[in-house]
Figure 1: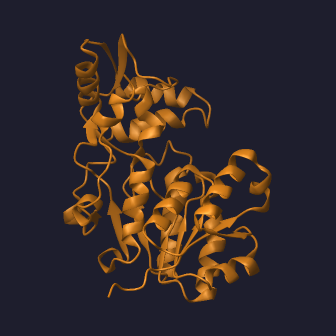
Figure 2: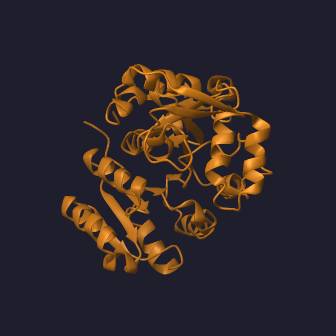
Length: 309
């Protein structure tokens, strides 16, 4: 007899990742709940998602991280909490951590991370505390003794891959391409629904308790030079490669106002500094998702780029 599936509360179900998390949670037979702001129901795009999720079986609870009484009531109905709020709301998770501590019934918390490992990035002078805020939440979770899993997906394919990492573009280049640094540092891309599948698999897995789970799927870890090679092979055409040095990129970042420069900051972190791949997962005591869950099929970069031809 299979063990009972954990009840999961997802905060941020109308977001791109939160919506995928809710769908995977349901498909994995977890009783699934969503904490939803009242204003979301009057937003046409969000209400459409909520209508779908409600019809599929998600229990929607009206409330927010600021509604502590409602939040506590929601937490008391579940075993696991996954937060998928936007980066702008990361520090609002302090209210959630406090509520989880008060409720005393949550056996796993997955905070809003799902990007590069905030404790591993080396751009603290450039990112306007983007990553330090996530690290701050980590330290609070650990200080309060709340059981956790941190999931680091690195880049979502929808973020940079449609343009082949070309700032300001929405489609891949067909004549010439900018390559940052020497083009050899490797970044990682994962589709949102694939990231959701790996995240949901961690919630009842004792191996991932109080661990960092990184996603480095084979076929999804490439340098900019390699990405261009793949794209050229698909097009049957050679692109003109314009290399932008580290100093030139840093100059662009410092001259461009915040937050418009954050796209370049993320590129600098991953494809010049190598922040997503410079460290060994095994030697750090962390875990890698595709090794934990080899049964999960995922979209490779090559497959994703096929759809852009």
